[in-house]
Image 1 (cartoon, helix red, strand yellow):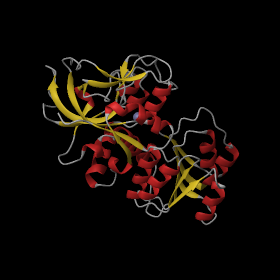
Image 2 (cartoon, rainbow, N blue to C red; image 1 turned 135 degrees about the vertical axis):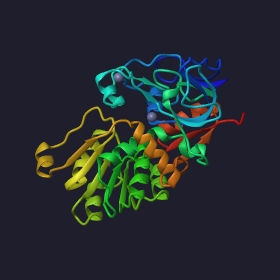
Image 3 (cartoon, rainbow, N blue to C red; image 1 turned 180 degrees about the vertical axis):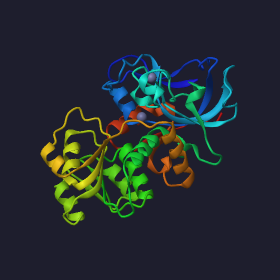
Image 4 (cartoon, rainbow, N blue to C red; image 1 turned 90 degrees about the vertical axis):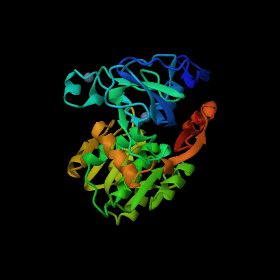
Length: 346
Ligand SMILES: [Zn+2]
Ligand SMILES: [Zn+2]
């Protein structure tokens, strides 16, 4: 079968190769991948700047956002059957540690992750433990459910903050994470919604306008803090979602939040500065959000069914596995929001 393989550590080292179809273990299923997308993390793996809890093994088939149809089940598998349409849970906890016992899989120190610790979805077929698949409702399109992994992160944010109709929301970072949050707060009735990007984000800011951002700002061309203050009557935003991942994005988030605002941080900035004195005086309500859990995936599936959050709205590039390298470049250069691999019909 065809697969996009990271062959060795270091920048690049990615090749589209013919590899054997995976052999499943008794507790696994074999999924014919029908749709899969590039995530920001894949760009980090391409550049080899990804910092995980454990070294990434190579060679490895990349890809952890995907959906497909079960074509084979292991001898012990009872929860699903051949022919089921499923989405894949990317993160699999050890099941026995302190955090797993409390359902907080993303804090497990011994996790497995599709496309990061074992072969992923940028391939015609993918083997995965049966506990990590979720049956999809009939009628949902592959390009709408291929990104449930990232949508689940958004569901996690929405669980931690309260969004009311008419809330003024600032989202910093028009990448996939920021854009899915935009769809979620829009569906919850927030507005106006202001998306903040920087130099080189033109294409992404256009997508944000297409899916309902009331204002988009390029902070390289203006004083974004001042502009947001103007747009919020001099008060600041009720809700700020930071998905930019830079020290500047973190600083801006604190500067544009009104007193008592809710802030959610999802970016991976390695350092940042804020002024505790101001934050305390402003009584900010701050959340840090990492991954989604099972209940968040279930919520994300409901969003798709309701038409409130659709992956297809964010696809800027539809390519084949053979064009993977082009897809990675478009993602790294921030010309893409979502790069989607159209799988050939078998
Ligand atoms: Zn991801
Ligand atoms: Zn664990």
